[in-house]
Length: 259
Image (cartoon, rainbow, N blue to C red; front, side):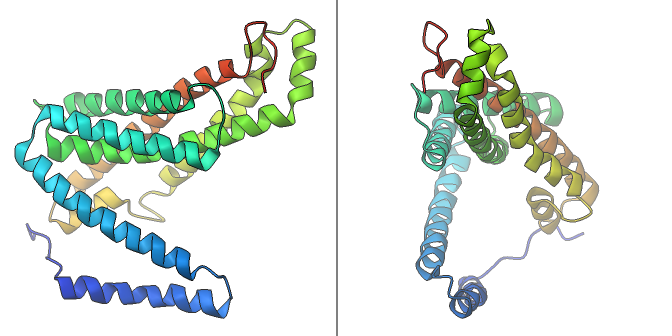
């Protein structure tokens, strides 16, 4: 089996961008008015990926645990800001809660995966920790976004119903548990649907990358299975932490709705 992936020249990379003309053609013929969005998105993607490529090359060379943790914290900080911007939530200490939920879940799961699942002696091996943590943080970001949006929407739409339950003696948790469960389910369903389709409808990115680089497909499958389990675990943990704290922010010290 080939042990090294085929290199891509700069010319090949530039030519690949011509595939975007399909998007431009559809945008033009359907009058979608997305030309600026398409250009901005792919220019930003290109700059970010090239920049991160050089940064990772440097981090992999020094392979220092402190630097890796700083990089991880920055990665989570950006993820938390994206969640805040997407959801436009307004509750006390939102940034800190979102950051903490994703940071704790990603860190714990990545360490467990490194120590137990993969068996690394050094869990802060850069070429393992950063890619694994990146996949976990990215998926947690998407799921926490869904959870926050759904939970806020449910609470606002059912404000009167919740107040009626409170007036009848229900606790804050009892009055909102149904809506918390709906938000939780909504955040988990996309990932569960994606997992169900793995191997039949699609080959996941990490597995494809390993196979292209010459790794035995069976070994690539094992890694991908571990990753999917870890991602689902991190999503559950991050959403649980987030909704648990968020649930309390809807009420004041007198257990009255504060929205």
